[in-house]
Length: 427
Image 1: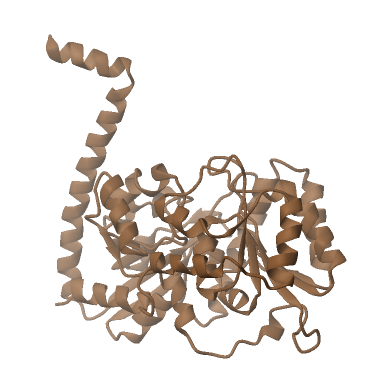
Image 2: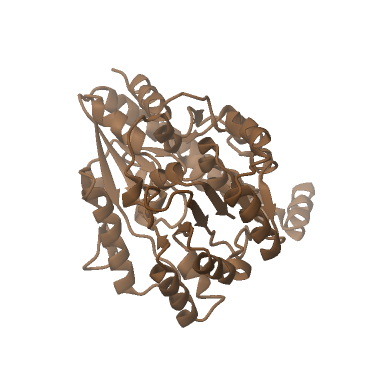
């Protein structure tokens, strides 16, 4: 009688489905851990470890330093598996064309590439046929069922290396998803981030490691950058010119970071009216598709066409964008991850604010608190002039204190993750 009443109460308040799902997911996680133990025992007996990086959007590629570290290790054989992500409103030809761009990005860089999508048939390819021992994911969403972790985990160890710094105040995406429960290892960027998993994730930080953020390993490289091949105008031809990155986010809903609708005309007019500024538009890969729900298609196309025709502006949508960051003078963005990715340059960040934004978690708030907050075009115009054009970066000292939140300075995250894998899978 008591059990029946309790079930009735829980059903009335909507908790019974949640409890059932939680129990089911917990049992799935236990079963997956047993499978991983079998995989580890098998891999330890092997001479080589076949490691796949599943990448559906090259603009989010985050594991180059890890790929290189595994390549240098005689036991690992890393491969890129180019997958396809389906976007709402995207046609089959558009999807096939995007897939080809994604594939070409890696083949042109001399990396080993395997197909995870059959563009001719429009079908995803089962990874089991590629013989992986380890599969790295860059994101938990946009996956076909055949590439989902509960399927791939049956025949390989699964790892998650997030493509962006987890700074958003969106716990349901970061922690409360089946993907996070089933993954063998998540590699987060700092001990502070690992502690957040321990406090917030149902599985805690049992399957979380913190070795730094491989994307930022590029700042440890000492090499010459041909900035003339990146920007429209060379410093030699136009001394004193200011190079500015504008990186707009796509999220008009849920996270509500996007500010494009109130400032895109300003940026176009400003770049046109100020020829001694040089601009690179680095849009989020989903921005064009998201804009279709808020602007007419011809208006979106017309904006990008006008921007590309400016003599002092370019559009860059690929994944190897850190040379752009290192040779720029400032970034203007509403994207949470870019706030941290750009921070090591030491250059100013103008943070565009959407008043409806879901905001940041504890780490994100600490990174963002000493940036130049921009709420409208009047503030934007004023701060571009003072901070970028005149060079009065008055928040720099305070801003740079947040660097410690991104991991251990000078630590090569890619090599650290490779060492962890080598040790965990040692014979």
